[in-house]
Image (cartoon, rainbow, N blue to C red; front, side, top):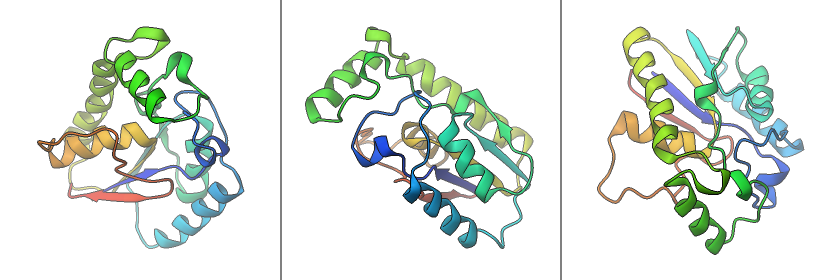
Length: 173
């Protein structure tokens, strides 16, 4: 089984700011969420854990996973360029979406982002079939990984969250 988790809350999540690849920390709520999730998952024996190297994901991982995780750059959140830290208004999100289509305004190109996440998923399917896998990452990564394992729906909408902070999504492996 694959367990996909989005890290707990940060202050930027709380105040609706675009985290992107800026290295923010879990806040008090995020740390409590990790402790609660650890309790929920305590009876699952994970064979391997893949985690974003960004601090908010690492903090979350340290509380949940008791082994030595693989910190993988492919799980870093998309670089939002000049939009990092900006308030997530509908207008800002539309401008960000337009920018990532081409990598404009210092953002990461969306196709490159999808490819790096799918590359990790290919590795997981190939090398870890039938194992309990834990993946700890970020919002947009969770959307790509979710669509990788369940298939892209016709109404492909990246504005809808697949995993809120501290939420787990599972897939058969």
